[in-house]
Image (cartoon, rainbow, N blue to C red; front, top):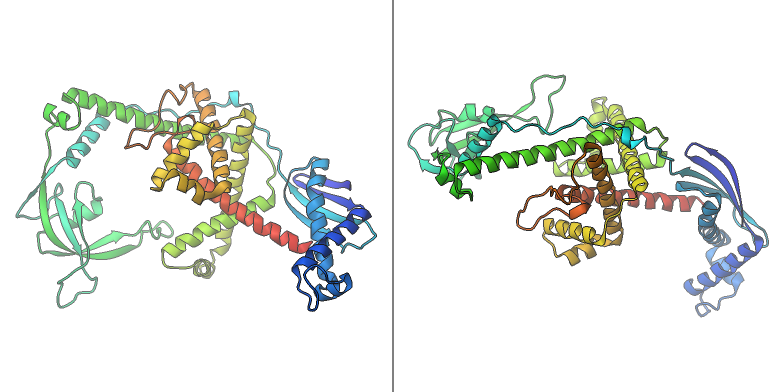
Length: 480
């Protein structure tokens, strides 16, 4: 086999591969034998049909296509190793192979980009944990008092500190409101101001047409008022809340002896939360600074794969809303917003791919790995979240997913280690990021629970990208 590198430009390369005539003839003989065993020819036992009869049966073009695919599949991996290339996608071009002649095919490949990270020691992370003050502690205390309050029925209109039982009714008035919809308790102190203002002063038996802003479903256009929807409800019950006093007796219900201990425990919990929030902010800050300081060309095929993955997310979201992707795109086109949407989708795909490539290079540069113990704990944690036995979880997810998951855990671990080094934080094995919650503990040095969950979602996305890549390779095979 001979290889010739014709051109390299950025992440694109063109090269030729020539297979000797002897290997071409051997491939023809092998494919003919394989076809003879699989193709039924009337009057002949499997594998015993004469070659001429077999060729007429399957067609000369089909035979040549089979041989061409076999030759490319066999020679291409050796060629890229010989040329020291790392393709992420390739197109193949050639004429049909002929017996007794050498076979040459040309490859147009997109290459894995060379990513050069900046000097990590020179990066300064500015995000820092907030300070716990008395106001924060007081708000948490009030939340605990509210959660541990005793409900008491009252015979009066609802106040802003009550709990109200609402039953959903048909939006259009009917002769009878009997047998309404589902019921739900609403804590007026937790409910938004919009709901609270409409329910204060209402009593048992009152029917209220709640006007609710629908920001989550459809943001306001041009900075105006968000769209609203109406929910008709019946007030079925009103109860007051008797909250426990912040004293030693209340502290005992929280597992502590004195209120001073309880207040200090609350302060400690708030500090831990602020530290976790700050660490998350530092992670994202490091990623942003790495992206800003790292310039490289991204293969278009990777961006297209990620765009398709993002589009599948949109399709699933539309399905949950009872719509379709086609209808969503048609609505955008009708509003002359389709081009803007496609641009934003591609920009997000490009950023996502660049982020992945930078983090992969960070993990490679650091040589970070996940131990078997760390990986097993992360898998057990995700199995618990899915309410599955770990063994069954592994079988259902499959080897490809588990490989992606382990790689992404290692990538996240490398990012966390770098952040801790830059801010001078203690090793994560000495500062658990998760709290005991019935067995869902942090996955050791492989990362906290949220990292395991994040890697889980990214592994699913990677599986989607792998599927897209497989479809592209199938298309490329058809083009050979």
